[in-house]
Image 1 (cartoon, rainbow, N blue to C red):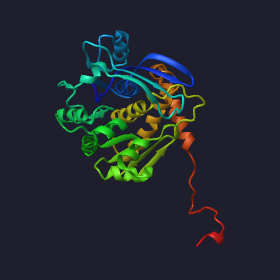
Image 2 (image 1 turned 90 degrees about the vertical axis):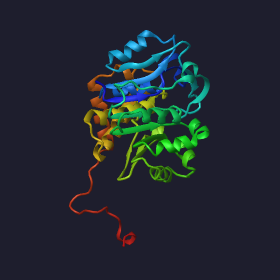
Image 3 (image 1 turned 120 degrees about the horizontal axis):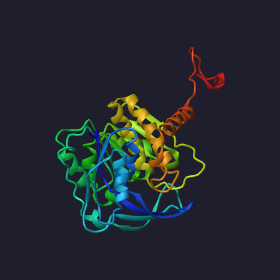
Length: 318
């Protein structure tokens, strides 16, 4: 029985990066999220694909224990996106978007999905995100959402209304500044927290992520990879690790959220090591444990003890 629901896109991507070009790879926000979270919890997907969707890709999801009963297949072609990271690995330049069956996507939840305690509203029209939330039979224990600059441009009122209803907003740095019209990340996060959520996770690409919570601020670095192959699914893989961990321990407390941010960074670090799903779908438990422990070591230091202060020279002290 699933413990978490994701509503978003399943797509085929063509990406051009400094490592080369890869065509028609399985992607989409719901795909990356569900595969990343499937290592930690039982997740259900609500999305739409076309008649060209490879049965092997559906089997890959199902074989991981992902509930695909909400993955509708209709006449037409699956959503396709093409982008280039040649100029900047932190930001894709969209070359082509073919919405196809995704253009008419109107998610309808089945009875088995309406009561799930963890919900991720992946990057789709905020009006659709709000519709999904309204279909839940009870308010989930945690609701998180993602968005993008397109919705800030064309659906700002609906997005602002949605943000007021969620627990966690996941947004990248440029989008946070655009949405709030603030000059800095901390100021933008403070403004967003005032709008309703208990936490804002600002994704900063190769610089990691910062959790701005009502009770604390916590920064987690990106794993220092020598080679980044394809950043396409990093943000959704982060979200999958983040929500997947919270779902697995059924804990939304402050300490759990800090650990969830690290788990999110762990999953994102794997996602960017290959094109598409290749690396993310083939991990072992020992791979994940080793990378998590590497993050612990990456950020470990011993605080000063016994009342000891920093050795600031007296002439600069009070």
